[in-house]
Image (tube, rainbow, N blue to C red; front, side, top):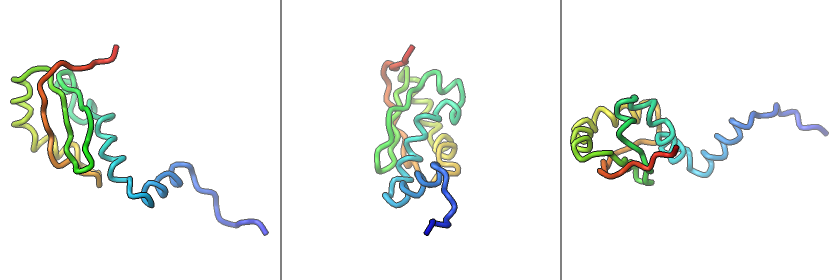
Length: 105
């Protein structure tokens, strides 16, 4: 006898799998790195490079200069709100680290 369930899309199947494995939050946190420029805007994106989000919600961001790192640390509450809007995977803290950016050509 044929299974009468409607086929699900790959996106639905993947979302279900991630939810079962408890990975939805981590995937959303990791997505922030890929969406960084769109979330923070071109001026901040030009002098920063997100590196990773730890499992406990700490985002590490490399910053081109120490003065920019200081300025961005003062802006952290606003940037955290932007990053967490509409996500279940929350970034709880941003660590701004001054140092050379590893831009890919």
